[in-house]
Image (cartoon, rainbow over all chains, first blue to last red):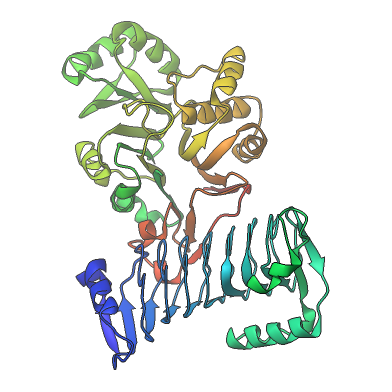
Length: 227
Length: 298
């Protein structure tokens, strides 16, 4: 385990170290101490490493991540995992607004609650929230899955495209062009896998699926394979 | 952007350190707003006495001989503490109105920052660290306080455009965001006899709350009413003589983090502002919900 003291060495030095890790690195386990809510921790990583941040983070932790697994041993600030491409982010506490915004791939897990605009404009990422999500979650979601084990706030999935939303609890209101959908066997199987990977013991059958009513954008069945 | 910090102490043993704690929190938020900074502190209550904090661009001339002149004018004992561009006038509570009227005539160049039994407001153009040093903020003691560092949007970078704003006795408000209906609301308030001094949107919000409270609302009720009447983006932190409140608009783009322990309730625009507080590791830390009023009282 490589330990990096962010308070002592600073953000630039941390990124120099983490970005220097290649595909075949032997130093796969990293620990960042003294994060103190700093912005942009462990951003732009592109190696199969596991980074654990010991404490709460500020804006944009894990943004643009590829391959790496990032554990946040605390709560995460706004824009965590923004534009993530692959890899994993696991947040032990709560996540602030616009978690996983525009993220293309990978998995983000929140053990607590996520605030407003969770998964806004998601483009392929999977997000599993053990608690609740705030208002306008998955606004303009294009692709990927948002799983909410608790409740969802107002206007879930407003103006969404082909992203899928699974909510176990109450949905305060659905956004424009978002509707309740049937849970078919393939959705149960998909959800089972996501819940398992996210360390969540909720049963897939307890969830309701929501998605686009396809009235607001020019959906063409011939392009369904692209989502 | 703008940065807000706030501290409401439950544990009296921390009161001597209020200024120091608030200063450290506010300096952490410097990069959210480098234009101007200000702080409101609620100090000790002395029976029958009140405090008037004034500001002048020419403190040497404005404050020279003022103590004696004002004492003579209102026929009561007055003491004056000069701190850089500001002066805190200690006077009998029942002479407040008289003193304010007299000051307008005697020193028309001065502006009132705050008036009340316990509140003192200091604010100037500059970085939080510099402003705190000029006014010796770390030395201030009290039961609660609010700090703000400003990135100007709706009005010019001036001392009077800096936060906190105070439009009523022992009341103050700081704001992160921008209001879009402040001009029409300013006119409405003027018709009701509630006057504002600047072009600033936040001052209108402060005046609105004062107006509501003058009409029998509690601070909590006034904030609730503001959710309907104030249009725009806001995270507000407000202070009264014995209370401290927080409210965010229904969209809640403007960040807010709170922490509570047995010793205090703290507010920060970001978690970074809270990391130096005692016992923060074990504090309950959460984001205030949109369109929800939070309020604590001594």
